[in-house]
Amino acid sequence: MAHLTQNPADKERFICLYPIYINSKKTLAEGRRIPAEKAVENPSCTEIRDVLTAAGLNVYMENKMHPREWNRDIQFRGRVRVQLKQEEGHFCQDRFSSRKDVMFYVAEMIPKLKTRTQKGGADTSSQQGEGGKKSKKKKK
Image (tube, rainbow, N blue to C red):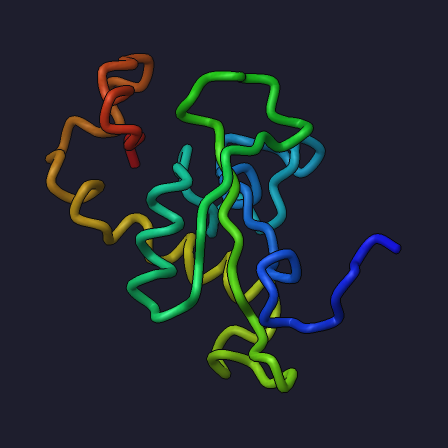
């Protein structure tokens, strides 16, 4: 009796999206689910939430960890739940008919976020700097 409800509009029926799924720094064995060339470098839960909220989807965040995420740091913590289907079983938006569609969309839109684009050209050169920790945003 894992799912007490069959209603796709109930919060526990929303799909789970961990940042590790679209992280280009991870291997498939470490939990990445889309091709590395389409993935984003170290995405955060807040970035995923911002992109999906802007797309008009019903989302909420949970303070959970992916089992394969060895780094217990707050910046790697979190899980986003996304509503794909309405109560009648129809998709909320036709362009998002699977979790892969959502992952590809998020990975495409995160680099266009203002928090990622306003940093300037020094993004790729200094990678080890943990200075962006308080804002929870990582470099592109």
